[in-house]
Image 1 (tube, one colour):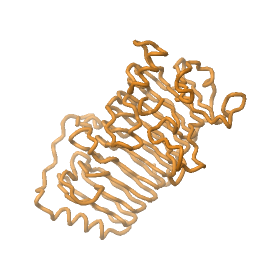
Image 2: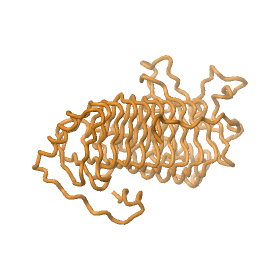
Image 3: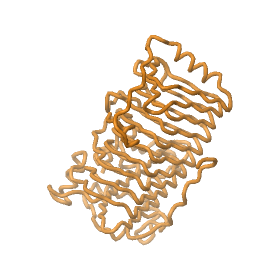
Image 4: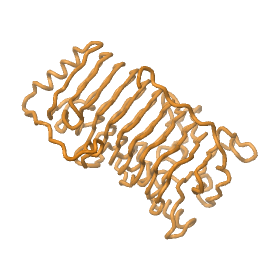
Length: 411
């Protein structure tokens, strides 16, 4: 079961209000704002606060910050807008190589590449930031919206990302992470935690994406991922066709996926509302079910299997009736009939056979489901999907709950 087979007024919706007044437009011919802002970023010192007043500002080149201890603050995500629609220089909208960094209350639109990339920083806060590609879902949109990588002590909250051709909110190869109260819409992946350690993802809304919330572990990166809690989220109607660039890891994500765990360890999924995903509400899979699977060139210490996955106390509704890809359509019809549907949880069936004890993984490595009478499909990927199983007994177990993530110096 290969995974490849397997706007609206967002700010008003978040605020619960009606239409907002558009910010005043600055002249695109006036390059003075752009040059002043870049000079402020170059001159910034620890403790600097760069205030950007309300307005719509047109920039044609990316911005860079390399000083620690800086805050960038706008007047609101619907009031201070940095538009990069005519960007000709720089792959990112804003590239940050710094620690103790805060950005809040502004919008980044139509960047040529990633909107906000933060590389190798500690103590990162992203708050009330909107990222949007305003022409809707397109492969030519930037890959990542909010993109901290190789960071630690990261907080992303009350933000909105729309239209990323890879992941709207992406945290990679990082440690100690909280992603909360955000909205991700019409991205390929709404929210993605990849190769990261100790992440709490909660009270977010992911809708209209290809896949809602992803917890992935990729080979040949600086660290392996583990310990992620996904809880109290609203994940629904993520059925947008996959528009990722060919070869991207998320090009494997089938349209109609709610929450996906791929090759990650110690993931707890609980107290979520997950509904109406045409492929499946939850997918648990291995490296072998991806379009980037390659038998050669992989770190021998890489763990390709999902281990220690605990799914409990969620509220599921609908979905599974029209899976993406012919292989999955055939599998669904073979097991559940033409008019049937997949259960809420679909597992590709790959398991580390070298570690089995009496035919089962060690207790701490099992996939456990305590979620009422929800069904689970073992698709039998290792057997060519010839003998799928709907037996739920192997998942009737519990795992130790993960502790909350505690951020240093943040409420």
